[in-house]
Image 1 (cartoon, chains in turn green, orange, cyan, blue):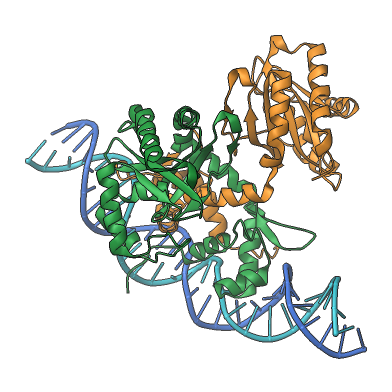
Image 2 (cartoon, chains in turn orange, green, cyan, red):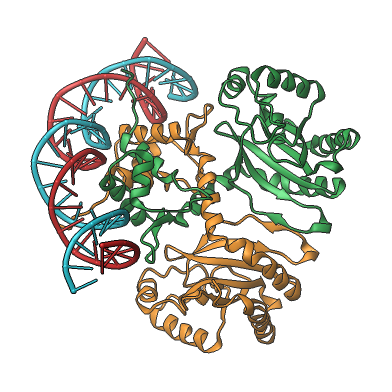
Amino acid sequence: MDQEYSVKSLARAMKVLECFSVKQPELGVTEIAKTLGMQKSTICNILSTFEKTGYVVQNPQTSKYHLGTKILHLSYIVNHHLGLRDIFLPYLHKVAEEAREACYFGILSNDEVLYIEAVYPSHQQQTRNILGERAPLYCTGLGKAMLAYMPDEDAERIIGGELKAFTSFTLCDPMVLRDHLDEIRRNGYSVDNMEHEFGIRCVAVPVFGANGQVMAAVSVSGPSPRFDHNTVVKHAELISRILQPLQHCL
Amino acid sequence: MDQEYSVKSLARAMKVLECFSVKQPELGVTEIAKTLGMQKSTICNILSTFEKTGYVVQNPQTSKYHLGTKILHLSYIVNHHLGLRDIFLPYLHKVAEEAREACYFGILSNDEVLYIEAVYPSHQQQTRNILGERAPLYCTGLGKAMLAYMPDEDAERIIGGELKAFTSFTLCDPMVLRDHLDEIRRNGYSVDNMEHEFGIRCVAVPVFGANGQVMAAVSVSGPSPRFDHNTVVKHAELISRILQPLQHCL
DNA sequence: TCTTTGCGTTCCGTATTACAGAACGCAGTT
DNA sequence: AACTGCGTTCTGTAATACGGAACGCAAAGA
């Protein structure tokens, strides 16, 4: 048996936190217990601890639980420590402005794309608070841009994993995907051809850190009719040009 | 002894997470152990568990730890569930625009102001990602606006607590503070006269939920010379007017 | 080069304590 | 009034978290 120097009750507790989702932000004790295959009493203890510490709140109306605002304290620290958003924001605005399309920015996090910011061109002035939203690597523009430049070992873990089809365009065959990633490396940018969401095309360019490892990606995204081959190339060049000063500086 | 149905190891583990801060985003095992008065081995176990679950990452260079991006997944859910930012954003833009000053938006969280958004007028186009930043209730515009309308029991807990002086203007005397809160209730808005940060004045108006309880506040803030009495009143009326449609709707 | 120092990690026995299971109290239904 | 399903409480015991000491390593100092 492998000696695990881990605190099992803690791992269990974190699993409880992870039961909550955007679709199910409020959960009952029994619900969680069934999901995790644990006893109600155990869940109850864990939740009451989380409640005392502020990470979970019980709705007095429904007596169900939801995540508490204390979590945001932690996210603020992470965010500040990453500091990427503040560095990238002006560049993202420039990309959105010049491309006249929505511009997304994401990083690698636990084998997924973690969205940090969405910026829209000024004729549709707004910024979405998508920090924390996630998507798979193998079927998104941002994801594939990073996947193509990840260390082989890491990339193969993804490619060898489950490749769920989101649309009829999703590349679910590991072999096809590998060829596709080769192409991305040749081009220096990735194209998401409605692989994640039908009707949405997307071009993404990877960003490399000082250590040479891919650490983030920036994309331009919009309705597929506006993204023919020429436009895609133009957008890719645009992103590359604007991101130039940031490459290998982080 | 009071029967605590709480998981002690979990409470301890969360304390470990809370050691991290903006000022100290990276911590070593020994450092944390000293701070919490616990054994190194215990901290090590907890951290290795958090690392396996993605909530903490070890820097291979320094072998110190910092919070992981997984936290942001959770914050996304909280954020989505609150949904407040998206509701308020257009109103905040309007406030910032008309006041031609920075506009802040915060909610009550664990007896502190939790900042959700900062919006600047278009002549200094930007939005800061301050989600998760915190400040005391008793010495900030947003905080006092909420403190004045909190249930007595809750408010007294704050007023009776430690009232640290941030500047020479900070109101640290519970009696003075209580009178000041009375005034805020009479006016319907709060004024922060450099109590938290020297040179910065701020006007804030509370926002009430459907249940009649205060749940958030919106402020306008800037350099003190621009905030004389007349301007302050004007800003307060402006915020109140713009927020009108949201009052008692949440 | 050989200590010394201080770090993060590993290990183990035991005292702690987390957890399963059953019972309870309370709503809302039947 | 009985039933159903919820969240909560209780308790003994089996699991395990933790304290303490040792270890391995790297950097600093002699």
